[in-house]
Length: 315
Image (cartoon, rainbow, N blue to C red; front, side, top):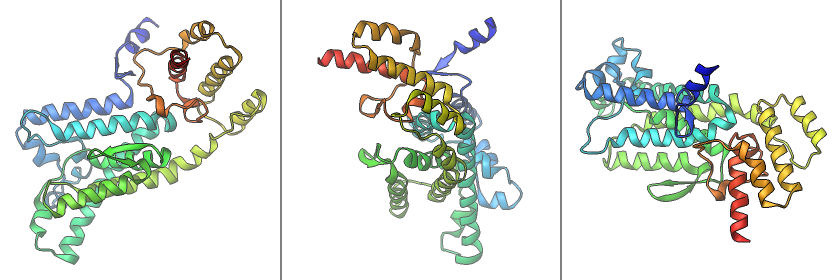
């Protein structure tokens, strides 16, 4: 027991270091450090180059997603952007879909991006044969953006009305994939930046498919009305095989106590045992105690305490 407690005390960004978010982040960062010390050998071996793939380097269709560009002056922009996007999106998605499906989504989208890149190369090589065919077949693709686009697609379906900043422009999450792809293709047309739009498109397509095939039915099972009586609510989540039923029951219990008591001191004392250190709680505009997603979150108590403190300050 002591060893388990000791191990769980190591956290990063409010999660255990063994949480999938931190494990994937750590793997990408470790590979990036290895790239810095391997010149371009790792790019040649593991980035996705269609000609090399066709010659037998089939692993590249997956391994390309762990590599990032090492061409930078002071800031490793490529890996920072991809890992920032991955972590922010993952923090919103994981409490809803669970750790296993988050990992499956990430790697499926990464593979999907590779499949679209190779598919595009095959079309170019045997059907279209464009002037830049040599570039399509010989320029390596690397980066986790295909996986990130998969998460972005799912995020847009789970949180359609949340706003994201794309090039400092606020965009609804449900439109984020389309707007990002348009920006990417414009960058490619005007040669502003080397972007693998096929990889992005492949990751997004896999994200949409993953949601409708693996998440949509499960998500529908956990939607409920908070206006149910406690007995009816418990029966409902049992009947629907709710995977977060223990967390929901705890959060409903917290919510009911807040409704029954008016004393700020009593509320604060009641919420103290439910506080999780270093929790990455939502910003105030996005927190809603009536939201079925919030009721599944382990940080519900943190948000509730923040809410009553804000109410006291404004009263």
